[in-house]
Amino acid sequence: MCTGIMYGQAALAGIFKEGDQLLVQTSLWTAHYDPEPDHNNHQKMINLEWYFPETDVDALPRPSGRDWRDEVRWLVGGANFTNSFDQRTTYLYMGGRYDFHNSGDLKAYGKLTAGLIHGYKGDYRDKIPLNRFGVAPAILPAFGVEYHRMNLEVIPFGTAGLMVNVGYYFR
Image (cartoon, rainbow, N blue to C red; front, side, top):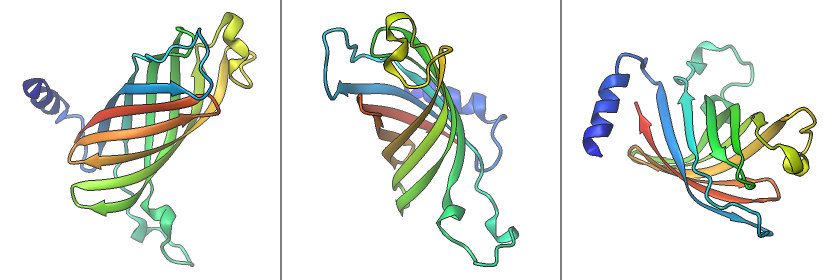
């Protein structure tokens, strides 16, 4: 596994600019708040998030000075997973991450993403709001910790359940 990670870092070395990051995640554990017999708790998810370099906020004229918004790391991402009803589903999104605690190797953060979700079909089409044409808007908060390049994240998905993801950052 270490060889694969080192190879992956070498392969991505030419793609990254200073400050870019790629987070690769998979689902570790899922639970539904109100489980039903047809619920799937094994998402088989693969998620990719691209973090843009930090903005040089000192170059931005702001009469009120710096504030918490200057510390947000912007990102775009996509996830492919098996939804609660065993249907392949895709979530494409953008968002931001704010580090609440940063002590070098250990970071605690909150993240908010918004995008479009596709894959809830047939009898399950109405299980997510506004899914009239097979694509629906979605907003997902997340709370996580990062240690060195490893990542552990908790994502509540609406009123349906909670997912725990694990990931690795390529820089």
